[in-house]
Image (cartoon, rainbow, N blue to C red; front, side, top):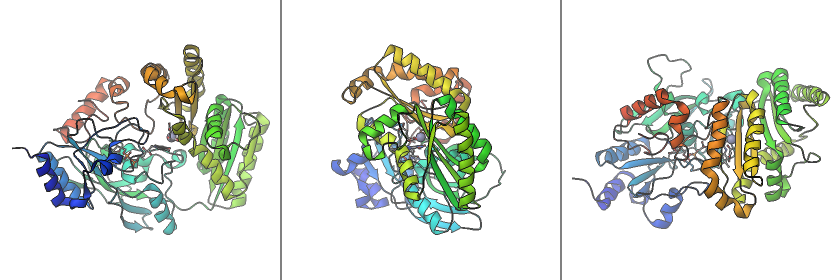
Length: 475
Ligand code: FAD
Ligand code: 2HG
Ligand code: ZN
Protein backbone atom coordinates (compact mmCIF):
# COMPACT_ATOMS: atom_id res chain seq x y z
CA UNK A 1 0.00 0.00 0.00
CA UNK A 2 1.42 3.39 -0.92
CA UNK A 3 2.08 6.06 1.69
CA UNK A 4 -0.01 9.20 2.00
CA UNK A 5 1.92 12.45 1.51
CA UNK A 6 1.83 13.03 5.24
CA UNK A 7 3.25 9.59 5.94
CA UNK A 8 5.95 10.10 3.32
CA UNK A 9 6.85 13.45 4.83
CA UNK A 10 7.12 12.03 8.30
CA UNK A 11 9.42 9.21 7.03
CA UNK A 12 11.53 11.83 5.25
CA UNK A 13 11.66 13.89 8.45
CA UNK A 14 12.96 10.90 10.33
CA UNK A 15 15.82 10.62 7.79
CA UNK A 16 16.95 14.25 7.48
CA UNK A 17 15.31 16.02 10.44
CA UNK A 18 12.05 17.96 10.40
CA UNK A 19 13.55 21.33 9.50
CA UNK A 20 15.28 19.87 6.42
CA UNK A 21 11.98 18.81 4.84
CA UNK A 22 10.69 22.02 3.31
CA UNK A 23 6.99 22.15 2.58
CA UNK A 24 5.83 25.67 3.55
CA UNK A 25 4.91 27.37 0.25
CA UNK A 26 7.07 30.47 0.76
CA UNK A 27 10.12 28.40 1.73
CA UNK A 28 9.53 25.91 -1.07
CA UNK A 29 9.14 28.57 -3.77
CA UNK A 30 12.86 29.06 -4.69
CA UNK A 31 13.20 25.31 -5.34
CA UNK A 32 10.29 25.33 -7.80
CA UNK A 33 11.47 27.92 -10.30
CA UNK A 34 14.56 28.17 -12.49
CA UNK A 35 17.08 31.01 -12.69
CA UNK A 36 15.56 32.47 -15.88
CA UNK A 37 12.01 32.13 -14.49
CA UNK A 38 11.00 30.21 -17.62
CA UNK A 39 10.06 26.98 -15.82
CA UNK A 40 7.92 26.52 -12.76
CA UNK A 41 6.84 23.30 -11.07
CA UNK A 42 5.37 21.86 -7.89
CA UNK A 43 6.80 19.41 -5.37
CA UNK A 44 5.76 17.45 -2.32
CA UNK A 45 8.82 18.86 -0.56
CA UNK A 46 12.40 20.01 -0.97
CA UNK A 47 14.82 17.93 1.07
CA UNK A 48 18.19 19.06 2.34
CA UNK A 49 20.23 16.00 3.35
CA UNK A 50 23.48 16.46 5.28
CA UNK A 51 25.42 13.48 3.96
CA UNK A 52 25.55 10.65 1.44
CA UNK A 53 23.91 8.17 3.78
CA UNK A 54 20.88 10.42 4.12
CA UNK A 55 20.69 10.83 0.33
CA UNK A 56 20.79 7.06 -0.02
CA UNK A 57 18.01 6.56 2.54
CA UNK A 58 15.81 9.19 0.88
CA UNK A 59 16.33 7.56 -2.51
CA UNK A 60 15.48 4.11 -1.13
CA UNK A 61 12.29 5.45 0.43
CA UNK A 62 11.32 7.22 -2.81
CA UNK A 63 12.14 4.12 -4.90
CA UNK A 64 9.93 1.96 -2.70
CA UNK A 65 7.06 4.44 -3.11
CA UNK A 66 7.68 5.32 -6.78
CA UNK A 67 8.27 8.99 -5.97
CA UNK A 68 10.34 10.80 -8.60
CA UNK A 69 13.36 12.87 -7.57
CA UNK A 70 14.75 16.12 -8.96
CA UNK A 71 18.34 16.78 -7.84
CA UNK A 72 19.20 20.45 -7.41
CA UNK A 73 22.50 22.25 -6.87
CA UNK A 74 22.80 26.03 -7.15
CA UNK A 75 19.75 26.19 -9.44
CA UNK A 76 21.59 28.32 -12.02
CA UNK A 77 21.01 25.88 -14.88
CA UNK A 78 19.66 27.40 -18.08
CA UNK A 79 17.60 24.46 -19.45
CA UNK A 80 15.06 23.83 -16.68
CA UNK A 81 16.84 20.63 -15.58
CA UNK A 82 16.59 21.33 -11.85
CA UNK A 83 12.91 22.35 -11.83
CA UNK A 84 10.29 19.77 -10.83
CA UNK A 85 7.35 19.14 -13.16
CA UNK A 86 3.80 20.43 -12.63
CA UNK A 87 2.33 17.25 -11.10
CA UNK A 88 3.34 18.06 -7.54
CA UNK A 89 4.28 14.36 -7.15
CA UNK A 90 8.07 14.83 -7.11
CA UNK A 91 10.57 15.72 -4.43
CA UNK A 92 13.51 18.06 -4.91
CA UNK A 93 16.78 16.95 -3.29
CA UNK A 94 18.95 20.00 -2.72
CA UNK A 95 22.65 19.29 -2.21
CA UNK A 96 23.26 22.69 -0.59
CA UNK A 97 24.08 21.33 2.90
CA UNK A 98 26.58 18.82 1.52
CA UNK A 99 29.31 21.41 1.22
CA UNK A 100 32.37 19.91 2.87
CA UNK A 101 35.86 19.67 1.45
CA UNK A 102 36.73 16.07 2.31
CA UNK A 103 40.42 16.08 1.39
CA UNK A 104 43.12 18.05 -0.37
CA UNK A 105 46.08 16.08 -1.72
CA UNK A 106 48.60 18.56 -3.09
CA UNK A 107 51.03 15.83 -4.19
CA UNK A 108 48.32 14.10 -6.18
CA UNK A 109 47.04 17.54 -7.29
CA UNK A 110 43.47 16.70 -6.26
CA UNK A 111 40.69 17.96 -4.06
CA UNK A 112 37.79 15.78 -2.89
CA UNK A 113 34.60 17.73 -2.32
CA UNK A 114 30.96 17.15 -1.64
CA UNK A 115 28.52 17.98 -4.42
CA UNK A 116 27.12 21.08 -2.70
CA UNK A 117 30.42 22.97 -2.61
CA UNK A 118 29.90 26.26 -4.46
CA UNK A 119 32.28 26.59 -7.40
CA UNK A 120 33.82 29.83 -6.11
CA UNK A 121 34.45 28.19 -2.72
CA UNK A 122 36.20 25.34 -4.51
CA UNK A 123 38.41 27.83 -6.35
CA UNK A 124 39.19 29.54 -3.01
CA UNK A 125 39.96 26.22 -1.27
CA UNK A 126 42.35 25.35 -4.08
CA UNK A 127 44.06 28.74 -3.73
CA UNK A 128 44.44 28.22 0.03
CA UNK A 129 46.37 25.04 -0.82
CA UNK A 130 48.49 27.03 -3.29
CA UNK A 131 46.79 25.34 -6.23
CA UNK A 132 44.54 26.45 -9.07
CA UNK A 133 41.09 25.09 -9.93
CA UNK A 134 40.41 26.39 -13.43
CA UNK A 135 36.66 25.89 -13.93
CA UNK A 136 35.19 29.38 -14.13
CA UNK A 137 31.79 30.70 -15.19
CA UNK A 138 29.55 33.67 -14.58
CA UNK A 139 27.39 31.79 -12.07
CA UNK A 140 30.38 30.58 -10.00
CA UNK A 141 29.20 32.44 -6.89
CA UNK A 142 26.15 30.15 -6.62
CA UNK A 143 26.46 27.10 -8.90
CA UNK A 144 27.75 23.96 -7.19
CA UNK A 145 30.28 21.38 -8.29
CA UNK A 146 27.60 18.64 -8.38
CA UNK A 147 25.61 20.83 -10.81
CA UNK A 148 28.75 21.59 -12.82
CA UNK A 149 29.48 17.88 -13.13
CA UNK A 150 25.88 17.03 -13.92
CA UNK A 151 25.78 19.57 -16.75
CA UNK A 152 29.42 19.01 -17.75
CA UNK A 153 29.73 22.79 -17.53
CA UNK A 154 32.15 24.61 -19.80
CA UNK A 155 32.87 28.24 -18.98
CA UNK A 156 35.81 30.40 -19.89
CA UNK A 157 38.91 28.21 -19.55
CA UNK A 158 37.88 25.15 -21.55
CA UNK A 159 40.32 25.87 -24.37
CA UNK A 160 43.21 25.24 -21.96
CA UNK A 161 41.81 22.96 -19.22
CA UNK A 162 38.78 21.22 -20.74
CA UNK A 163 35.16 20.91 -19.61
CA UNK A 164 34.18 19.80 -16.11
CA UNK A 165 34.41 16.18 -17.30
CA UNK A 166 38.14 16.60 -18.00
CA UNK A 167 38.67 18.03 -14.52
CA UNK A 168 37.12 15.08 -12.68
CA UNK A 169 38.95 11.93 -11.60
CA UNK A 170 36.26 10.17 -9.59
CA UNK A 171 32.71 10.35 -8.29
CA UNK A 172 30.51 9.17 -5.49
CA UNK A 173 26.95 8.65 -6.75
CA UNK A 174 23.72 7.52 -5.15
CA UNK A 175 22.04 5.28 -7.71
CA UNK A 176 18.27 5.19 -8.31
CA UNK A 177 17.92 2.14 -6.03
CA UNK A 178 19.78 3.91 -3.22
CA UNK A 179 23.07 2.01 -3.63
CA UNK A 180 26.21 4.11 -3.30
CA UNK A 181 28.70 3.88 -6.17
CA UNK A 182 32.15 4.98 -5.07
CA UNK A 183 35.05 5.77 -7.40
CA UNK A 184 36.68 8.47 -5.28
CA UNK A 185 40.16 7.12 -5.96
CA UNK A 186 41.85 10.12 -7.55
CA UNK A 187 43.46 7.98 -10.25
CA UNK A 188 44.66 9.31 -13.58
CA UNK A 189 44.70 5.83 -15.06
CA UNK A 190 42.13 3.10 -14.43
CA UNK A 191 41.15 0.71 -17.20
CA UNK A 192 39.09 -1.72 -15.17
CA UNK A 193 36.04 -2.20 -17.35
CA UNK A 194 33.48 0.37 -18.49
CA UNK A 195 34.00 3.97 -17.42
CA UNK A 196 30.97 4.40 -15.17
CA UNK A 197 32.07 7.82 -13.94
CA UNK A 198 31.61 9.40 -17.34
CA UNK A 199 28.02 8.17 -17.53
CA UNK A 200 26.99 10.42 -14.66
CA UNK A 201 28.86 13.49 -15.84
CA UNK A 202 26.53 15.49 -18.05
CA UNK A 203 23.55 13.23 -17.15
CA UNK A 204 21.71 16.15 -15.51
CA UNK A 205 20.52 14.04 -12.61
CA UNK A 206 18.77 11.51 -14.84
CA UNK A 207 20.88 8.52 -13.73
CA UNK A 208 21.63 9.22 -10.08
CA UNK A 209 22.68 11.83 -7.57
CA UNK A 210 26.32 12.88 -7.47
CA UNK A 211 27.25 13.33 -3.80
CA UNK A 212 31.04 13.88 -4.02
CA UNK A 213 33.86 14.14 -6.51
CA UNK A 214 37.63 14.13 -6.82
CA UNK A 215 38.66 17.11 -8.93
CA UNK A 216 42.04 17.90 -10.49
CA UNK A 217 44.16 20.81 -9.27
CA UNK A 218 46.87 22.69 -11.17
CA UNK A 219 49.79 24.95 -10.29
CA UNK A 220 48.83 28.62 -9.97
CA UNK A 221 50.07 30.56 -13.01
CA UNK A 222 52.81 33.07 -12.14
CA UNK A 223 51.25 35.76 -14.30
CA UNK A 224 48.08 36.43 -16.26
CA UNK A 225 47.62 39.16 -18.84
CA UNK A 226 44.25 40.11 -20.24
CA UNK A 227 43.51 42.18 -23.32
CA UNK A 228 40.40 43.54 -24.98
CA UNK A 229 40.79 43.49 -28.75
CA UNK A 230 38.57 44.95 -31.47
CA UNK A 231 38.20 42.92 -34.64
CA UNK A 232 36.34 43.80 -37.84
CA UNK A 233 34.39 40.55 -38.31
CA UNK A 234 33.81 37.03 -37.02
CA UNK A 235 36.15 35.73 -39.78
CA UNK A 236 38.91 38.01 -38.54
CA UNK A 237 38.15 36.98 -34.94
CA UNK A 238 38.89 33.37 -35.93
CA UNK A 239 42.10 34.54 -37.60
CA UNK A 240 42.99 36.36 -34.36
CA UNK A 241 42.32 33.17 -32.40
CA UNK A 242 44.58 31.19 -34.74
CA UNK A 243 47.36 33.76 -34.23
CA UNK A 244 47.05 33.44 -30.45
CA UNK A 245 46.96 29.63 -30.70
CA UNK A 246 50.09 29.62 -32.82
CA UNK A 247 51.91 32.20 -30.70
CA UNK A 248 50.85 31.25 -27.18
CA UNK A 249 49.83 27.59 -27.48
CA UNK A 250 48.93 26.23 -24.00
CA UNK A 251 49.46 29.68 -22.48
CA UNK A 252 46.27 30.86 -24.15
CA UNK A 253 43.72 30.43 -21.34
CA UNK A 254 40.81 32.58 -22.49
CA UNK A 255 39.37 33.71 -25.80
CA UNK A 256 35.85 35.15 -25.56
CA UNK A 257 34.03 36.93 -28.36
CA UNK A 258 31.33 39.60 -27.95
CA UNK A 259 29.30 41.07 -30.83
CA UNK A 260 28.40 44.75 -31.17
CA UNK A 261 24.77 44.05 -30.19
CA UNK A 262 25.91 42.25 -27.03
CA UNK A 263 28.12 45.20 -26.11
CA UNK A 264 25.30 47.68 -26.79
CA UNK A 265 23.00 45.73 -24.48
CA UNK A 266 25.71 45.62 -21.82
CA UNK A 267 26.22 49.38 -22.09
CA UNK A 268 22.48 49.97 -21.75
CA UNK A 269 22.02 47.91 -18.57
CA UNK A 270 25.49 48.28 -17.06
CA UNK A 271 26.89 51.63 -18.27
CA UNK A 272 29.89 51.31 -15.95
CA UNK A 273 30.90 48.21 -17.92
CA UNK A 274 30.78 49.87 -21.36
CA UNK A 275 33.72 48.90 -23.52
CA UNK A 276 36.72 51.20 -23.20
CA UNK A 277 37.65 50.60 -26.85
CA UNK A 278 36.88 53.48 -29.20
CA UNK A 279 33.85 53.42 -31.50
CA UNK A 280 31.48 50.56 -32.18
CA UNK A 281 33.32 47.47 -33.27
CA UNK A 282 31.59 44.54 -34.99
CA UNK A 283 33.26 42.24 -32.48
CA UNK A 284 35.43 42.58 -29.42
CA UNK A 285 37.47 39.73 -28.02
CA UNK A 286 38.72 39.14 -24.50
CA UNK A 287 42.05 37.33 -24.56
CA UNK A 288 43.86 35.91 -21.55
CA UNK A 289 47.41 34.58 -21.46
CA UNK A 290 48.71 32.70 -18.43
CA UNK A 291 52.39 32.14 -17.82
CA UNK A 292 54.50 29.94 -15.58
CA UNK A 293 57.73 31.85 -16.23
CA UNK A 294 57.29 35.55 -15.45
CA UNK A 295 55.03 38.52 -15.89
CA UNK A 296 57.49 40.05 -18.38
CA UNK A 297 57.50 36.85 -20.43
CA UNK A 298 53.70 36.84 -20.62
CA UNK A 299 53.53 40.54 -21.47
CA UNK A 300 56.12 40.13 -24.21
CA UNK A 301 54.13 37.29 -25.70
CA UNK A 302 50.88 39.27 -25.57
CA UNK A 303 52.52 42.33 -27.16
CA UNK A 304 54.19 40.34 -29.93
CA UNK A 305 50.99 38.57 -30.93
CA UNK A 306 48.94 41.76 -30.77
CA UNK A 307 51.50 43.64 -32.87
CA UNK A 308 51.25 41.04 -35.62
CA UNK A 309 47.44 41.00 -35.37
CA UNK A 310 47.20 44.79 -35.65
CA UNK A 311 49.55 44.76 -38.66
CA UNK A 312 47.55 42.02 -40.39
CA UNK A 313 44.24 43.77 -39.74
CA UNK A 314 42.58 40.96 -37.78
CA UNK A 315 42.79 43.36 -34.83
CA UNK A 316 41.86 46.99 -35.28
CA UNK A 317 42.46 48.20 -31.73
CA UNK A 318 43.53 46.69 -28.42
CA UNK A 319 43.92 47.52 -24.73
CA UNK A 320 46.03 45.33 -22.48
CA UNK A 321 44.79 45.54 -18.89
CA UNK A 322 47.38 47.42 -16.90
CA UNK A 323 46.41 45.97 -13.52
CA UNK A 324 44.27 43.30 -11.90
CA UNK A 325 41.31 45.68 -11.47
CA UNK A 326 41.21 46.46 -15.19
CA UNK A 327 41.55 42.77 -16.08
CA UNK A 328 38.67 42.06 -13.70
CA UNK A 329 36.62 44.74 -15.44
CA UNK A 330 37.16 43.09 -18.83
CA UNK A 331 35.95 39.80 -17.37
CA UNK A 332 33.01 41.58 -15.72
CA UNK A 333 32.04 42.95 -19.13
CA UNK A 334 31.93 39.48 -20.59
CA UNK A 335 30.19 37.87 -17.61
CA UNK A 336 27.52 40.57 -17.39
CA UNK A 337 26.17 39.99 -20.89
CA UNK A 338 23.82 37.16 -19.77
CA UNK A 339 22.79 39.33 -16.81
CA UNK A 340 21.99 42.24 -19.15
CA UNK A 341 19.96 39.80 -21.23
CA UNK A 342 18.04 38.67 -18.14
CA UNK A 343 17.34 42.32 -17.26
CA UNK A 344 16.13 42.90 -20.81
CA UNK A 345 13.50 40.14 -20.75
CA UNK A 346 13.30 36.65 -22.21
CA UNK A 347 15.50 35.64 -25.11
CA UNK A 348 15.57 32.53 -27.24
CA UNK A 349 18.78 30.83 -26.22
CA UNK A 350 20.93 28.78 -28.56
CA UNK A 351 23.97 27.34 -26.83
CA UNK A 352 25.57 25.87 -29.92
CA UNK A 353 28.96 24.49 -30.79
CA UNK A 354 30.43 24.23 -34.24
CA UNK A 355 33.79 23.59 -35.80
CA UNK A 356 35.51 26.94 -35.10
CA UNK A 357 36.04 27.38 -38.83
CA UNK A 358 32.25 27.24 -39.41
CA UNK A 359 31.29 29.94 -36.90
CA UNK A 360 31.53 32.96 -39.21
CA UNK A 361 29.37 31.23 -41.87
CA UNK A 362 26.88 30.16 -39.18
CA UNK A 363 26.48 33.72 -37.91
CA UNK A 364 26.21 35.15 -41.41
CA UNK A 365 23.58 32.65 -42.60
CA UNK A 366 21.48 32.72 -39.43
CA UNK A 367 21.57 36.51 -39.23
CA UNK A 368 20.46 36.76 -42.86
CA UNK A 369 17.68 34.18 -42.45
CA UNK A 370 16.34 35.66 -39.23
CA UNK A 371 16.69 39.32 -40.10
CA UNK A 372 14.95 38.81 -43.45
CA UNK A 373 11.98 37.17 -41.76
CA UNK A 374 11.90 39.35 -38.62
CA UNK A 375 13.67 42.56 -39.63
CA UNK A 376 13.62 44.16 -36.18
CA UNK A 377 14.86 41.31 -34.01
CA UNK A 378 18.09 41.55 -32.05
CA UNK A 379 20.70 38.82 -32.17
CA UNK A 380 22.85 38.90 -29.06
CA UNK A 381 25.73 36.66 -30.00
CA UNK A 382 28.77 36.08 -27.87
CA UNK A 383 30.62 33.18 -26.40
CA UNK A 384 33.61 30.97 -26.02
CA UNK A 385 35.07 31.28 -29.51
CA UNK A 386 38.19 29.37 -28.44
CA UNK A 387 35.95 26.31 -27.92
CA UNK A 388 33.71 26.89 -30.95
CA UNK A 389 30.84 27.61 -28.52
CA UNK A 390 28.53 30.43 -29.43
CA UNK A 391 25.62 31.81 -27.42
CA UNK A 392 23.43 32.84 -30.32
CA UNK A 393 20.56 34.39 -28.40
CA UNK A 394 17.61 35.98 -30.15
CA UNK A 395 15.49 38.73 -28.59
CA UNK A 396 12.44 40.70 -29.65
CA UNK A 397 12.68 44.16 -31.21
CA UNK A 398 12.49 45.99 -27.87
CA UNK A 399 12.65 45.01 -24.25
CA UNK A 400 8.89 45.62 -23.92
CA UNK A 401 8.12 43.19 -26.75
CA UNK A 402 10.44 40.38 -25.72
CA UNK A 403 7.83 38.33 -23.84
CA UNK A 404 5.27 38.24 -26.67
CA UNK A 405 8.02 37.73 -29.24
CA UNK A 406 9.41 34.86 -27.20
CA UNK A 407 6.03 33.15 -26.85
CA UNK A 408 5.08 33.50 -30.50
CA UNK A 409 8.32 32.77 -32.28
CA UNK A 410 10.52 30.59 -30.00
CA UNK A 411 9.76 27.31 -31.75
CA UNK A 412 10.09 28.54 -35.30
CA UNK A 413 13.27 30.52 -34.62
CA UNK A 414 14.83 27.60 -32.75
CA UNK A 415 14.01 25.29 -35.67
CA UNK A 416 15.69 27.67 -38.15
CA UNK A 417 18.82 28.01 -36.03
CA UNK A 418 19.06 24.29 -35.26
CA UNK A 419 18.68 23.43 -38.96
CA UNK A 420 21.75 25.54 -39.63
CA UNK A 421 23.59 23.89 -36.73
CA UNK A 422 22.86 20.46 -38.24
CA UNK A 423 23.92 21.57 -41.72
CA UNK A 424 27.28 22.66 -40.33
CA UNK A 425 27.80 19.54 -38.16
CA UNK A 426 27.40 21.34 -34.86
CA UNK A 427 25.74 20.58 -31.52
CA UNK A 428 22.53 22.10 -30.15
CA UNK A 429 23.94 22.01 -26.63
CA UNK A 430 27.56 22.90 -26.15
CA UNK A 431 27.67 23.38 -22.39
CA UNK A 432 24.27 24.07 -20.79
CA UNK A 433 22.78 20.61 -21.29
CA UNK A 434 19.37 19.46 -22.47
CA UNK A 435 17.15 19.69 -19.39
CA UNK A 436 13.50 20.07 -20.33
CA UNK A 437 14.24 22.84 -22.81
CA UNK A 438 15.77 20.62 -25.49
CA UNK A 439 14.42 17.18 -24.55
CA UNK A 440 12.23 17.00 -27.67
CA UNK A 441 15.20 17.75 -29.90
CA UNK A 442 17.53 15.03 -28.59
CA UNK A 443 16.47 12.16 -30.84
CA UNK A 444 16.52 14.23 -34.02
CA UNK A 445 19.87 15.70 -33.14
CA UNK A 446 21.73 12.59 -31.99
CA UNK A 447 20.07 10.14 -34.41
CA UNK A 448 18.22 6.89 -33.67
CA UNK A 449 21.24 4.70 -32.91
CA UNK A 450 22.60 7.02 -30.21
CA UNK A 451 19.13 7.84 -28.88
CA UNK A 452 18.10 4.19 -28.46
CA UNK A 453 21.38 3.37 -26.78
CA UNK A 454 20.83 6.26 -24.36
CA UNK A 455 17.29 5.01 -23.70
CA UNK A 456 18.65 1.52 -22.92
CA UNK A 457 21.22 2.99 -20.50
CA UNK A 458 18.56 5.06 -18.77
CA UNK A 459 16.23 2.04 -18.45
CA UNK A 460 19.02 -0.20 -17.16
CA UNK A 461 20.08 2.22 -14.43
CA UNK A 462 16.70 3.76 -13.61
CA UNK A 463 14.07 1.16 -14.61
CA UNK A 464 11.20 3.02 -12.94
CA UNK A 465 12.19 6.40 -14.43
CA UNK A 466 12.35 8.09 -11.05
CA UNK A 467 15.50 10.16 -11.56
CA UNK A 468 14.61 13.54 -12.97
CA UNK A 469 12.01 12.16 -15.41
CA UNK A 470 11.21 14.32 -18.42
CA UNK A 471 14.71 15.79 -18.48
CA UNK A 472 17.44 14.99 -21.02
CA UNK A 473 15.69 11.99 -22.63
CA UNK A 474 12.11 10.96 -23.39
CA UNK A 475 11.38 7.28 -22.82
P1 FAD B 1 21.48 23.21 -11.12
O1 FAD B 1 20.94 24.30 -11.95
O2 FAD B 1 20.97 23.10 -9.74
O3 FAD B 1 21.22 21.81 -11.86
C1 FAD B 1 21.58 21.62 -13.20
C2 FAD B 1 21.25 20.16 -13.60
O4 FAD B 1 22.08 19.25 -12.87
C3 FAD B 1 19.83 19.75 -13.29
O5 FAD B 1 19.42 18.81 -14.25
C4 FAD B 1 19.93 19.07 -11.93
O6 FAD B 1 18.91 18.12 -11.73
C5 FAD B 1 21.29 18.41 -12.03
N1 FAD B 1 22.02 18.32 -10.76
C6 FAD B 1 22.42 19.34 -9.96
N2 FAD B 1 23.15 18.85 -8.93
C7 FAD B 1 23.20 17.51 -9.09
C8 FAD B 1 23.81 16.44 -8.37
N3 FAD B 1 24.53 16.66 -7.27
N4 FAD B 1 23.64 15.17 -8.83
C9 FAD B 1 22.93 14.92 -9.95
N5 FAD B 1 22.32 15.89 -10.67
C10 FAD B 1 22.48 17.17 -10.25
N6 FAD B 1 27.17 27.15 -17.87
C11 FAD B 1 28.30 26.85 -18.55
O7 FAD B 1 28.53 25.69 -18.87
N7 FAD B 1 29.19 27.84 -18.90
C12 FAD B 1 29.00 29.13 -18.57
O8 FAD B 1 29.81 29.97 -18.93
C13 FAD B 1 27.83 29.46 -17.82
N8 FAD B 1 27.61 30.73 -17.44
C14 FAD B 1 26.48 31.02 -16.75
C15 FAD B 1 26.25 32.33 -16.37
C16 FAD B 1 25.10 32.68 -15.68
C17 FAD B 1 24.87 34.10 -15.27
C18 FAD B 1 24.15 31.67 -15.36
C19 FAD B 1 22.90 32.00 -14.60
C20 FAD B 1 24.37 30.36 -15.72
C21 FAD B 1 25.53 30.02 -16.43
N9 FAD B 1 25.79 28.71 -16.81
C22 FAD B 1 26.93 28.41 -17.50
C23 FAD B 1 24.80 27.66 -16.52
C24 FAD B 1 24.92 27.01 -15.11
O9 FAD B 1 25.56 27.85 -14.21
C25 FAD B 1 25.69 25.71 -15.21
O10 FAD B 1 24.92 24.79 -15.96
C26 FAD B 1 26.02 25.06 -13.87
O11 FAD B 1 26.89 23.99 -14.09
C27 FAD B 1 24.79 24.59 -13.10
O12 FAD B 1 25.17 24.30 -11.77
P2 FAD B 1 24.07 24.35 -10.61
O13 FAD B 1 24.72 23.88 -9.36
O14 FAD B 1 23.41 25.64 -10.55
O15 FAD B 1 23.08 23.22 -11.13
C1 2HG C 1 27.93 32.50 -20.68
O1 2HG C 1 28.82 32.06 -21.40
C2 2HG C 1 26.88 31.57 -20.19
O2 2HG C 1 27.90 33.68 -20.33
C3 2HG C 1 25.45 32.07 -20.35
O3 2HG C 1 27.04 30.30 -20.71
C4 2HG C 1 25.02 32.14 -21.78
O4 2HG C 1 22.95 33.10 -21.09
C5 2HG C 1 23.57 32.56 -21.99
O5 2HG C 1 23.07 32.35 -23.09
ZN1 ZN D 1 28.79 30.07 -21.93
